[in-house]
Image (cartoon, rainbow, N blue to C red; front, side, top):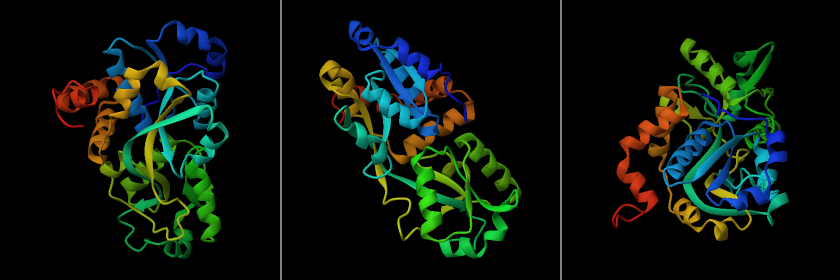
Length: 291
């Protein structure tokens, strides 16, 4: 996974102001995080909107800071908010200063995942009974991502709720994926936190551990969000993004293209070239094709 080129966010917030954005309504800042689907769709809409004359800046930072940036009007839009469960904790303090818009992906889900070759590990009870097989640095370990992410908190809940003798090792999405790749190559036991949509489900044969207590929530839809009043200030962008929808296959294909190319800008460019009818549909240039 390749990180988005970025600048120091705290410094950027000082330089950004409502007045500077209002002076040019074609200049927009998209708040992003370093998740593969967020990288993919942020670069996708950067390219598509720039083709329509917009000046788009991608600002990458932690998820919680994206919400505060939207509330403070230092960020115009962000393309990924999981509701009603995953990101509710981040949205709640700013509900009167952030507008949530249309759903563009249905059926998102956080999960605790193991490779399918672990045929005897299917439930939390199986995981608990086989904890010694998942030892890393002396302790049974679940490989997690950033500590501030929703899935990190859900994993802590799962460990407590199912009385798992595991620790969660928080690092980053790329580090977790590197651990998964290494273990998969060796057919070694590993448990990782993962979410759908993600290209890893197409790259590897994986399965989710059964979660009857719904420690990882009951599934979400992915919506886009903006600073308050954005729809009135930018009706064209709002209309376009509200008409945008991606299937699991479409989003997985976009993410895999980026992963294979190794560069978000080039991966998006190639994918857009291969899907002209879909792009025209999103942009309202489809001559009557139903969205």
